[in-house]
Amino acid sequence: MRLFIARLVLPVIALTLTATAEAKLKKGDAFPFASLPALNGKGTVDMTKYKGKVVIVDFWASWCEPCKIELPYLNNLAKKYKGKDVVIVGVNLDEKQADALTFLKAHPVQLPLAYDGAKKVLAEKAEIEVMPTSFIIDKNGVIAERHQAFREGDGEKIEKEVAELLKK
Image (cartoon, rainbow, N blue to C red):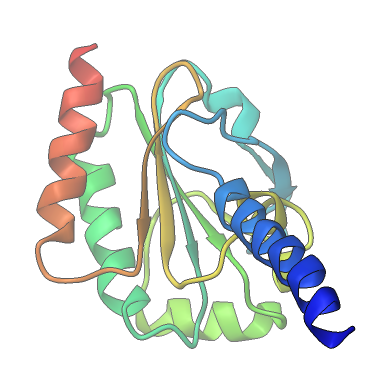
């Protein structure tokens, strides 16, 4: 009887795990743009207005060590592409907004910053599991790349991807 149940249940579990792994937003999927509260508490960051541009949406948190390197890099990238059809948005996932604001005092950036504490809105739809996670989205709102973590060489790779999308 146990063998029968194991043969019946295990494939169902494996199928469920496989379906869950494949459900993650990936290259070629439409990005679920959203309007989120601004991290500074003043107004909102409405990402829906960025359609038609190349968009990088970067999910980060104050406790994330690679974010200390990635956010300043993205800030510099935004300066480089200022006036072109590129927008970089940071989405903070800290449970306490104050933690993110403290982080930004030590690592200031001038990007549009949204707050999605405890993965309530966008991060859940984007299925964020690793920090930082960023999406590079083409002018049609389609995910061109999904990057998880931030390692040496990732900055150059991201910049190359953005430049290619701008040519299209």
